[in-house]
Every structure is written in C-alpha cells, then in structure tokens.
Amino acid sequence: MNKPVLLVIDDDAQVLAAVRRDLRARYRESYTVISASSGEEALATIRELKARGDSLAIVISDQRMPGMQGNDVLAQSRDVYPLARRVMLTAYSDIDAAIKAINVAHLDHYLSKPWDPPEEFLFPVIDDLLDAWQAEYLPEAKGLRLVGHQWSPRSHEIKDFLAGNLIPYRWLDVARNPDTRSLLDAAGIGASELPALFFEDGSALRNPEPRQVAERLGRSLSATHDLYDLVIVGAGPSGLGAAVYGASEGLRLMLAGSRLACLDEARPKAERSLAGCAGRFPQLAAESWETRATGWPRGSRRVS
Image (cartoon, one colour):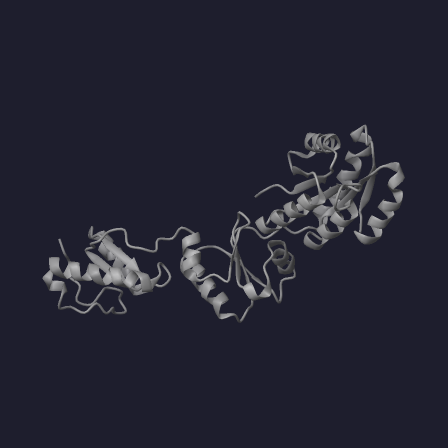
C-alpha cells in the first residue's frame, strides 16, 4: 500500500524546497511528500491521486501565487479529499487572506513565514493535524474499481466477466457510495459514461465492453496455434472438467468461452481446429461434442 501524501504548493522555488526538505526529514518514514509550483498543477495532482486510490493527508499551500490563489486551491481540494487537513502559508500581511480561507476553505491552520526553527513552529502543528486525520480517515479504495448503477445491464456484464475470470475488484454503486462522485469528477467522467472501470495506475475505461476489459487486462483473445488436438467451446464446469482431463493426457487443447475469451471471435478458429482434429482422428468426426453433467465430452476418445 502506498504511503499517505503530504502535498506542498508554492510558486517560490526556494520556499517550496525548504518546506519539502523539512517535511521529508521528519515524516518520510510514514508519508510521501510531493510538491507543486502552482494551484493548477496541485489540483491536477490531487485528481490523479484520487484516481489512483492514494490517500491525501495534508495540503499546505501558499496564498499569494500567480493564477489560482491558495484559498481557492484549498477550497477545491476539499471537494476531492474532504478529510485532508488544509494549511495555509502566509506572510504577516496576509492575515485577511487567512481569515477568508478559514471561512471558505474550512482551513485547519495557517503558518506564518518564516517557520524557523521547524521543531518549534512547523512540526508540532503538523503532528497535531496528522493525529486528527489518522483518527478520522478511511483508506481509499485501491486496485480494480467498477463504478456504475446497480440495475445497469452493462455493469452486470462487466461484473460477470471479472467474477468469471476470478479477477478481484471492488464494486462502487453511485447511488449508495458518496465517494464515487469525487472519484468520477476527478477523472472527468460523466453519468452517461458509466459504468467506469478504474485501474490501479489511475486510468479508466468508460462504458467498456468485456472485450475491451480483457484487452486492458492482458487476457488472451485469439488462438496461439493453428491446430489443436482438442478444442472445447464453452468454459463452464463441464468445459473446465474436459480441459483438465485433456491436459492430463498431454493433448494440445484450446478452451474458448464467453468469459475466458470473446466467443464470437474464438468460434471460427475453434471450428477450423475441430475440422483439423477430425482429419487427424477420424473417430472424432462422427461423434457429438455435447457435454454431459459429468463434464466429459460425449463420445470423446482417449488418444495416445
């Protein structure tokens, strides 16, 4: 699991480096310290963290920056990470800005520049804020996450595909899970693009088909060889049982199914391979390939 993040924002490169250095010296064992030189860059970083499922513990922002001001950055960060603590760096003349940030961005603390020595003016404040955050926060959802509506046919189709392939994922219902809105907003995904499948690297597929999911996960969608000793179309319990027996006999086999592969694309290849098998083993040509409840293809013969 990735460490929670401490995000520092300042357009002054020297101040940014000083804050980053002090925070890393004390908190690098338990937290990841990252920085941004503008409000726009900071918000893009926050959205990326949300899409990846990383936790954000504290946002420390300067107030006077070109473009977006610090209080605006802190206010918008609250929409994505409502539990993250928000701290403003201010000069003595910016007390009015700090008061505005308290009212608008629900500021947790403000620090006056300079904060030297950090052991007296910086670390005690950050320690208290981190303790309060640790007491409230819940770990962000990580790994494969499927966001959609409960009664959506496409959502059920993707859930069925993932479950059928034993791929672990987390289902997030947009109507019941309040965190889905910030996740979708951070990724720029609208309601018409659901369901959305989020990957651990932060990327997402919008309203995907099972084939797209299979390709993204690196699943095989085509046959590797032109000729097989045994082709099983249908990857249910019977088909899987037949595959186990065929493999135990040392046969080159292919198992094609709507979950393990895209059946429409695999069927022509399977039919050609069946024809090839019939040419090599005439005793298979006149037999039916329907399955019994036992899982062994009716009429199949041991081939040695």
